[in-house]
Length: 137
Length: 426
Image 1 (cartoon, rainbow over the protein chains, first blue to last red):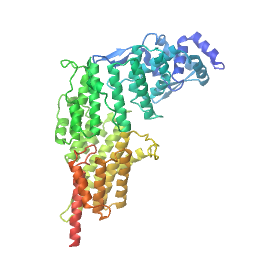
Image 2 (tube, each protein chain N blue to C red):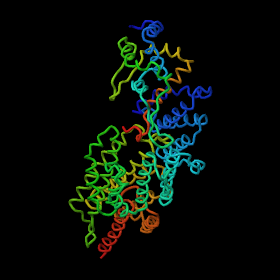
Image 3 (cartoon, rainbow over the protein chains, first blue to last red):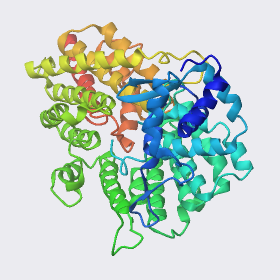
Image 4 (spheres, chains in turn brown, blue):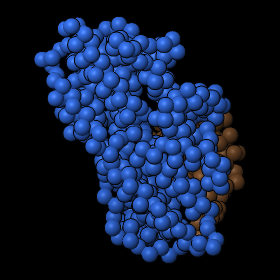
């Protein structure tokens, strides 16, 4: 898929694989470039934290934040194959960047979308490493 | 892993104030947001350095009134204190309400004790080691019959830090015994951790058993744990310690014979050269940093912790240069320049007030001038004055061998110079 018209490309993605379109909007809020893929991969896995009792407990993201995320692999593969997303390996991590024209278009699209903002915020917070006792490096 | 997520986190938090003001975040989301921002303040940004760390805390503080739990407030205070200390070398006051609150659970109890520990580190900055020990001496779990995992982890830290405070008070024999003795607490130390090794090696050096100190640090440097991604800084700190232990080995190996002639053995010469080689390399590493040289009036972008480590390296270099001059006929000018560099490094640490490092600087410069016969640059009275100050001070064992061994050696240098002088007159 070559993007001559970002809006049309986005509509087509939405129709073919909705979760891929969701990932694009979320990636836009996260800056559009240099996004570690693990932010999306870790979303469905529980995060560790200290409970009030001082023990390790695991918490998951709200189901509405990760709705459709079981298809993340497929969605990233689809977006890469379509040339919408560039995935490169850097320092042992897979880093994802959106095509600039599509990113610009989506910035306008999600500008006032509080729900996407909250969702992206929760994703990056959830994947951020906890202290070393909870998550040894 | 945290570092690569800093940029997306910054991007995602750009509109946080709107989300907060419009009440769009649930309490669980606020808890996750605030704790993540505070955790992210542990990672300096590759482009903005510590500015990003302070910004993250500021944002967390903006969100806190929307969900002001004791645990989050304690976490925030802990991060503010740690950053103020490590980046600016300053004390951020401990909020009295948090120090005195009655914890409602094990989490709050552990965080409150961590705040006491952080407060103890502040007292160390003021050379109040006894006060620091007292701050953490009454540690208790929320339920003493069943300590939580978090409290047990903290207890190990507190136990280790109390040993460190004892070291800073100069109780080297007790500390060495505590570190060497197998016990329930000591079994939990990571015997390859930089903190453990530097304390143990420091004890050996201060107790004139520098060879053991050298061996301890050398064996740690062979350890594979120091080849992990986190290791370069740890490795550099251990290398600085290796230079320090080598210098102590050399200092223990220099004497003045019955005629006052300086004598140095082959082992000491080799140790001195090794210390010098290590320091020269590490100094270059620090000095190559683009923000290393400060322009007058500009804000220092280098964390104070790094400035202190640099001072430590320069202090070793300068001691090596002076020993080379006295015992190996090295360049007087080089020794003078090295001690001038120390003054610059002291200023960068903002320690140019009448403190321990300033007195050590003055004491050494006086001794150097007296040894070389520059009577117009220093007087015996000045040398004695600084010696008295150092003797009366509580001691400062931040830099190995500087508080006791170095002062003793300088006393010997000045005394021998007098003998040489008298003999010349005769």
